[in-house]
Amino acid sequence: MAALAEPPTMAPLVGSVIDNIGMGPYQWKEGMVSSCVWLADGAELLLIGSVTRAMELEWDLTATQKGGLVSIVFVGVMLGNMASGPCSDRIGRRWPTIISYAAIGIFSVLSTFTTGFWTLSAARFFVGASFGFGQPASLSYCLEISPTSWRTFGYCFSGYLFIAGEAYSACIIMVDDPSMKNFDWRWLLIVAALPSFAFTFMAAAFLNESPSWLASQGKEEDAMNVLVKMNKANGSPCARLEFSTAPREEANVLGSFAEMQRDFRAIFGPAMLYSTLVSCFTCFCMNVLYYGGLYAFPQVLSENVKTGSSPAFALLMGALWEAPGYIITYGCDRFMGRRPTIIFGQIFLITCVLAFVHGGSSNNSENEDGLEYYMVHYGYAGYKCFASIVLFMIAFSAVTRPVRSCWVCVNSSTVPS
Image (tube, rainbow, N blue to C red):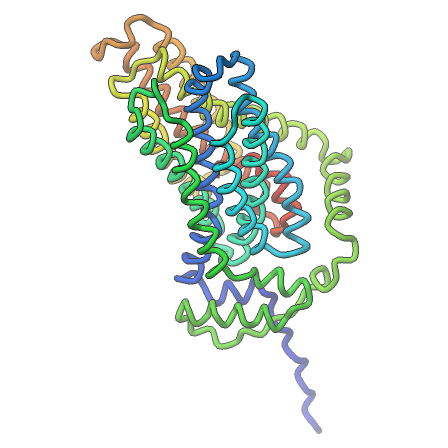
């Protein structure tokens, strides 16, 4: 009696192939080239908050106009995020990243030729839109090329690049004027744009396309070529690189905008409405704290609050205090629940804000032996550290579902990183 033939084994999906290949030099190279959008983001946001005082003196700006110069950047980020998701799902992850780098550099340089509030606001709007356009594409790409067990680390990596951007701006501020009283703000904006130009050429020369996106577009041969490069660069013993395409990836029948509409109907439907509103309110509060701090700290450190060092050095230390936050977050993601971490982080942030406000507003804050002096440092360090923790946990909870750029763009305003 003839033996029954065994059914053919179905090839794994692209993500499973990447899991088999594992983490290696390929992901490090591609992640660095693509994720430096976050470095440019950190550099631009810290710098524009720091130089508004110099612009105020030069152009006699009102307090509303000073705040408007920073706020208009975030309006650009929002619109850039909204445009990036559909574009990244349509043309891939590579080109939006390259376009973002180039546009950040170009509009940053154009900012130095402005002659007043309105022209500078227009230029900074497009700077915000530029790195907002690159963030979802970059984040989606890094998560798509990473093995599943490394995605949390990949997300942390973008946060560290954001910190590196802040540190870069703080360093060039220290070179120009550590006291932050007499800036050459045009020179600072040009120097801050240099990394964007450098990474434009690096991305154009070395950045590959996402194999998951290529497979979803029916470009199986191109996807296979990328997987072969990945396998070779990592020196992986993975022998089988063949993959199958999930039914959802074979044809984007609904289209990106229709899929976003379907997602919005689900998250704002009766079953999820309460959770959605709570999450949105929490995200709003944490963004106000985190990004509001990027604007507020340069103002108060250069004018009112004394830390025992130059304001520029204090900004550098504040950026570095964010680094432990991501390490703690990575540990919490591994060993603890995210909800308790978010609750604890928010309670701790309240104490940090109260300590900084009380210590900074006291006349005794300059006394290095006084309680108020230590309250300022406790509040400042804890604020910078734990704001990134809570913000990261909220954002990462939203994007650990299967990656799609249109979804990431909805949540990327909550990423510090």
